Image (cartoon, rainbow, N blue to C red; front, side):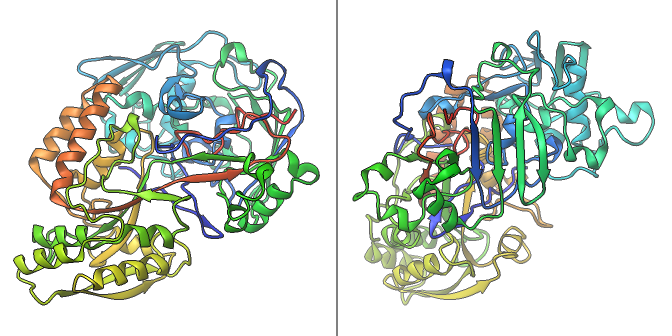
Length: 569
């Protein structure tokens, strides 16, 4: 099951936290000359709102933590560390390749590179990788992605390596025939397994150094840096891991000698400090704060500031959702009417304007790796088509319109907040749809939305993929077998179509990313005709970097700076 990507909002600027940039606009980069051969040295400052939730690789959700964990932990595969569309590709990391599939993609085999080591100089083995995965199943270490529990043979009730006899502590679905080979056995075909192998659960953990719940106080590094000091919710200082080398890690440049992360900062303060660039702030970036409105308004008049803005589009879709099994949304004409009635232009203005968002008529964002295919089955233009909406409502048996309740959270400038809700209310009114607004506390909004028993009649939601493929974008929201009646449900439209489920299974067996992308795009285009959701807009990302920072660009996978690539020297 895929976790709902958290959206952070700072000073009216839209942030997407985990998950790649679409092809709508290219990734911006710093313009100062950069030479990776001479980039070593200095201290990179990272100014963030939030701390990394956990430093234990078992408890980090996919590639979360604003890219910082990638400085400590290497995995079997990783994202391609390049700007633009190339950054959406998966490449080898600890492994020699992205994996060899067999048995119709139900078995995946990896071989480790020679010379890979932990921070203490000991060799990393396939048994270390297996143990790192096994401990992520322990109920004492929650928080990681649940894919492995769902995908691996016999893993459903596995409880990790800490309790029970030797047999129950071993996860038999993972074999290590020797110290450099690891084999995974899956319940069903999964062509996206190389993407999953980028998750921190695949980071090696030496069993002798495992301290259980205390491991995150000082996890053993397999990446270019190791922990020098850590104060939760305040600071994290990383220093070089002398047992790491570019010779065995071609992806991470690791230019700075030190990476100094400060957490708990106000987003306005972060942007003000980055814009001013005084003292150490000239060597700073942020991995969780997009450009604020004050800086956004200065870009046209301040060319120097404009040069220090990187751009990207994390693949995220914001949409109007409703339960299609309940009236009035069980009638296709009603769903189509809402699709015609929405004013995407007013919604985009409500979240900060066209610099931060672009209209969505497809569910998949405009990114090649996800299989994007353009379509617009209910053309409403920029400001909606209320006349067509009224016509469809009349056909559905509502000649005098209808009344619905739209739930929104109470966080200002949030995609699910009061500004967006009001914009939708105004647009739908023109189509004869009366919208009553219901305010929900932001801390419980998604708990209510994702529980079928408490799901609002109408709400604005958002979805981002854990990796840049159509599967993690479409499966949780359209696969009927993913519906969870007790809560944690993301298929809020309650779609359970046998043909869709069968097509998902078919595409999951495709191991060629290009072929899979084409198939996901075709499925999206087919499902779009049903108006199961109303796509509203896709987000963009604009982030500042300090005056001395070089090679700064927004990752096409994570939507934030790739700190493994920047330098300050």
